[in-house]
Image 1 (cartoon, helix red, strand yellow):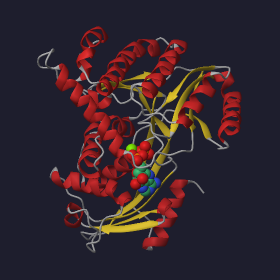
Image 2 (cartoon, protein in one colour; image 1 turned 135 degrees about the vertical axis):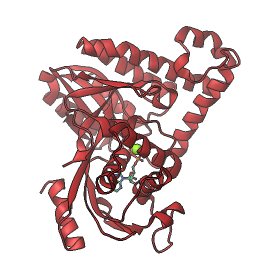
Image 3 (cartoon, rainbow, N blue to C red; image 1 turned 60 degrees about the vertical axis):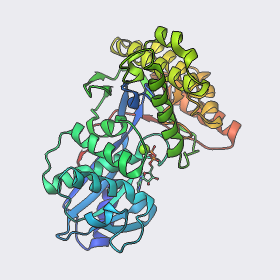
Length: 390
Ligand code: ADP
Ligand code: MG
């Protein structure tokens, strides 16, 4: 049984009727541009063919009843209880309910109605592995309430609402990329987002290459603290550099040459973090015409450089991610490999010549297992459409 059917069946068991709607919201993999969305940079994600499915109906009350099938947990809340991070019986909201609860809270704060809803949801996006299971949950709930209450928000507006939930309710100071990709994904397309202007366009995904996600199976523990620290370091860099560049708003506006001249004025850790961001934004700017021209060998080299920078400057890699990337880079047909997502565990993205895709998967599975005794989950992903009724 596929996940769509399983949430419908579970809904029937739970609520004794069939759901009125099902929505599907994809996860995403970021090809390049890591930790730059909150620095006004450019990102190059694709929405992937792994998603969260949510079966739902309005229940005519002010109490929302949520069933997280994958966690075998349920929870009820109202718009009033959710404001205090409580369930409808005044008990603390469980952590997983912060994502849908945050969406409800952010919507109500924006003046949007959130009628009581019965929901069952389930996903095949691994949790805490850098493929944005959290944004997919948020985008699924935003679309569910939009469907029931007729909000009329555009996909980008829905992404911004989800980001508000994640930033202000869950408490992770993430940028807009994850929710954007889940909301705005397009089949067979790489998304190109300018995180400052929110202008975006797509590039047809170059054919003859495989985009392969490799899960180290070491998911990130709760590292929102580390994430927020990286963001604070970037803010400190901007503050210190603004003494030399009046009016500086973000690291987006510092080119590599200027940064090199001014870097000596920054404390060592802040300098490393900022150097990653400045270089990574430069890499994405270089990457866009390469992708448009289908020059994947050159694009792959930027991925390799990106990994070194995330490992040594931004310090968000792990031993398993380094092993996975290093092994991949030595397998025939691999043009580039790097950790993807926030880091601290999770997945890598690999660009591989198509005729080598199958042998690459087999070889990486075997070699990673030999070194770590862990069987990884490695799959060839396809660029999918954004969140929609399914
Ligand atoms: P990711 O990189 O996958 O987005 P996060 O730490 O940001 O990792 O979000 C993971 C959290 O999102 C989970 O711990 C859980 O609270 C919530 N979540 C993700 N998928 C599901 C799901 N299928 N069911 C319930 N909650 C989920
Ligand atoms: Mg997330």
